[in-house]
Length: 151
Image 1 (cartoon, helix red, strand yellow):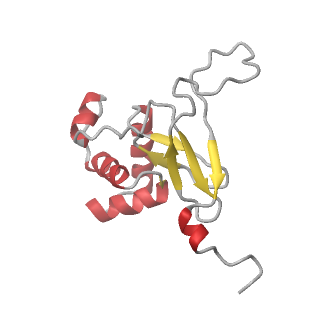
Image 2: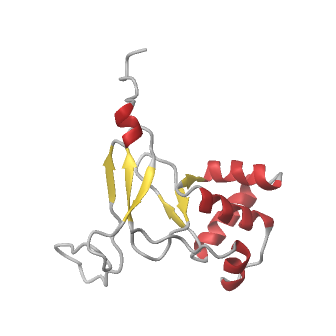
């Protein structure tokens, strides 16, 4: 079973991380708790719907600050905008749909960091492996998008 992100109130998480409790930070954490793997633009839109006007720079500053405090994780699947999630600190991986971009969590293949053993470490002390599995999600399998070039 996949571990769940910390479900304590955002205000508690922010205080424990030594961050000021702000409406923007709380809204970001609430949105990512409800909808993991959102791109920044979707987070910003949702935060604005929750609390009103937030500058783009203010929202990006909140995301960066929460990432720096290890309260969220930024992932960057190839060909996709950066996405954010609250599941941090457990070296899990992701599966991404090639058609619609849906992202889901996948537990570590072995369960111990770094999960995979490379053929050569080049002297590095490894502590994490980042793996992205690619495929077609169930929704896109059931309703494939039209082929390129067809209307």
